[in-house]
Length: 206
Image (tube, rainbow, N blue to C red; front, side, top):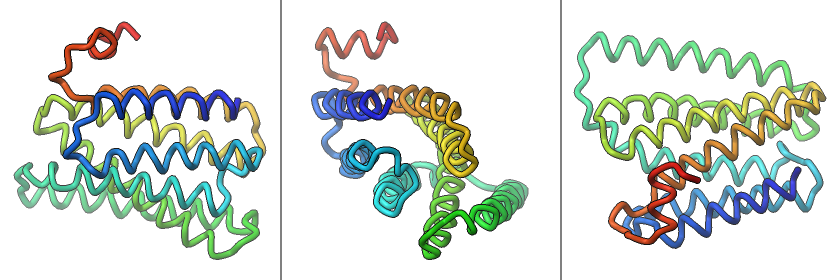
């Protein structure tokens, strides 16, 4: 399973490098850090939320946040919008805090509780930003929203499986994770390329 995950990451990264938009410097780094994380999981045999793998994925998610944050700022806000977004953010921060509190006793390195909390905050900001980006109806925003939604769903299954030792959850995690990354390939490839493989990807044939 870890081998499949690593191979899929490498394939997706390779496809992206072939068709990427060169000016988006954060996205190659996102793919690079996620591929390195998958490599670390493979080499360490399922240390999915250890210091190295978690830090690599955290940096990858931060690259996505840097990418989307300037884009979603184009959405106009009113006072009601700000209240709703603030409320959603605070509620989710509290949920993340309680989850980290629950798993604190299961973590060997106590500093990792801080890392997990920051991890959760980044995912919250990503989910809000990707939703706001979608409000612009940008051609890439739909696929970016799918990317974030599937990755966050995968994270939920992965955390439950890892800390509660529900191994069947790993299959759900990898399904959503790989499905999400496939949307990432579609979101970030250059739309002007006329290659046959590119056309297959854009039409959803593969």
